[in-house]
Amino acid sequence: MEQLLNLWHNTGIYQIAPGQAFMIAIGMLLLYLAIKKNFEPLLLVPIGFGAVLANIPGAGLAEPGGILYLFYTVGIESGAFPLIIFMGVGAMTDFGPLLSNPRTLFLGAAAQFGIFATLLGAVLLSTFGIFDFSLADAAAIGIIGGADGPTSIYVASKLAPDLLGAIAVASYSYMALVPLIQPPIMRALTTESERKIKMVQQRHVSHREKIVFPLVLLLLVAFLLPDAAPLLGMFCFGNLMKECAVVDRLSNTTQNSLINTVTIFLGLSVGSKLRAEEFLDLTTLGILILGMVAFSIGTASGVIMAKLMNKMSKTQLNPLIGSAGVSAVPMASRVSNKLGLESDPHNFLLMHAMGPNVAGVIGSAVAAGVLINYVAG
Amino acid sequence: MESSSLLNEGVTLMIFGVSFVFVFLTLLVIATSLMSWIITKYEKNVGLLPEDGIPAPTAVISSPKHGNKSQTHSDDSSLITILSAAVHKYRSRNKK
Image 1 (cartoon, each protein chain N blue to C red):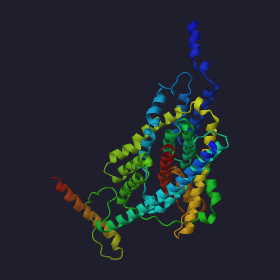
Image 2 (cartoon, rainbow over the protein chains, first blue to last red; image 1 turned 90 degrees about the vertical axis):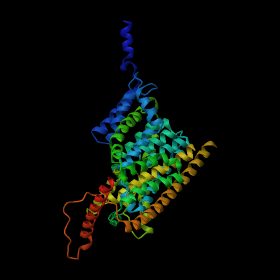
Image 3 (cartoon, one colour; image 1 turned 180 degrees about the vertical axis):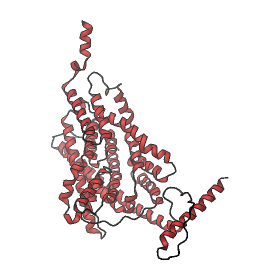
Image 4 (tube, one colour; image 1 turned 120 degrees about the vertical axis):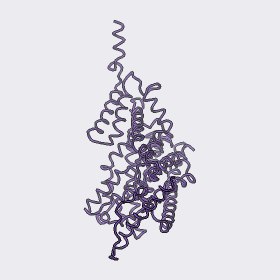
């Protein structure tokens, strides 16, 4: 009889707390969104499943000694996974559109304004006593506005590990929601005639330029902002492997098998942070809202910057590509392209938008470096 | 008192951060343009790197065209074929 009772006490039904049940439901919701609605499935499937695993009562998968905890310590706490992903992203990035029109880097810079505006917002909320964010927390929340998953995770793991789950979920879900969040903002800030602007044909970028560019970027980072060197260093390394064309085997591994392997473990580790005890908190809601604000401000400032540049220069930019300055490659570019086609069915902006888009990746990594430098250093 | 110093820090970080990102990317624009300019100049003398390594020589070399109107483009491509054939021959000979 006692053994039976013991068995009963060990079942999930006996042990489950309402919070855990709720978080398992959230995990299932993430799986539903990924599988049925196709929202960033590559990440949301592992994250959602990790969330379910982490909340199984009594199993302790996400507690010290558990396998998810192990993944988290090895990969995220050390900062390794986001950096390896960044290397893969570098190996998949083509800097051609950026090199043919370097001015678009400014759009990538402008879109990072969202990061800092949100940081200020989070600080203001703490000042009014609504939330209790430290400067480091505020910085980690702001980086969601960079719309760059690995960068957000990297910064959060350095500055605010306890908020990592919410920040990662916010940044990946907003990346998936780019096609819903951005268009209204872009339409509101541009006129019909601005949306019809045709851009100059891009010049051909030679192979040598593409090889030298990651090295130029790397040197600039090395001289000016060593704190961004982990992120941008890996990024440049991946890109150089791709462009130099003599290590195709390495470059293929980086952009395929390696990044896929790491994505699986990264997703599970992030999911392990969605434990009821840590996630079910009013702060999470605050982070989700602030993240959305960050993202919207980033989009808006990119568009406004494009309009400003049109005022100052003769070669016109279509302001729609400004919104692509938030990273979210290549989703943000596709959105720019789609809105451009709505106004003029012959105006293809996709390649033009890729310039600010990859500039956004560089910009958010630079912003991350600045934040880490200021807060931690 | 403590909260206002947090606010101050936030504002400082915002101004510092935004300006740093802009300065950095401005320098990157300058460095990139300079790099492109130098490389374009250099390539005028040396020629472009072919897109995917050195192309293998093709068996049929297009016969020279006599109509001079569209000379540049087609002549360039046959010139590249000839040159790459030469490079290939040179390289395979030097391997030994």
